[in-house]
Length: 385
Image: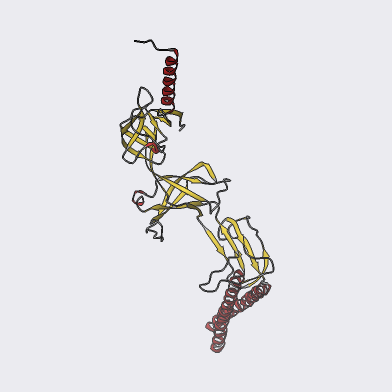
């Protein structure tokens, strides 16, 4: 058998190298995944609103005068804090104030007349008593006695009439005061002025029946606010008044506010092209203070139905619809598809009852292409929780 020549050896080595390079370049590369450890912690069962909720003031008054008139005193500006019964707007009312002064002076005069009439009655009454006594002693005639008693009765009636006249003038004062109040807008509660629609000297009119117009002053009770959130009708039966909750605001992304469910709407909202929902009112647990939580902010309410501590948990995002996860085998970086049994959970964590143990590693990047049982993976990072 002839020995291979030098050229033959070189050709064999070259062909082997090409085959090896081709195999290396066409080999199946490991799938890059992110993972996290199965851990012990707290898990909650929650429901959240289907659409954005709204921060709402407990009390809000859109105030307008009872009568039309010209603004003569605009006592507040937008953003100003006011106290209950403080004057906000006053219409021109000098005529009513003059009428009030007249009524009060008439009352004073009526009081003086009543006092005079009653003093006359007291004098006539004493005179009648004296004449009657003299009549009994045969020192005065019967006619004198009857006349004195008649004068006393007439003076008594005059006193009563004067007092009633005084009461009439007092009532008139109250009527004019009520008319004067109709020209003044007062704060019905402590609050902050959200909007003022009017300027000094402008004429304003009340809204016609059935035709709403802009309020002169929009007053909001800034010390009491809550979140009005729509909950899907499927979740509504689980929600009860008094359940704890968390309020999340876009304006404060890292600051969940503890809250409590205070009221559940007694009927279902049926809005066209939207899921049917139930409105739930969730109140902040603590005084808002200077956090500047303004009515109108968009908000989410997470209502806590149940909670467990010190249980085995994994991120909810790692679980597939048929309750399986992809975990790493103890040896090597190959994937194992595992069936698990779950307990309570929410959008963040789910309780694991069986199928995993503490310290196991599960894959969090479940949406990547090519993930399946038995493949080799490369760990990019461990997802922080």
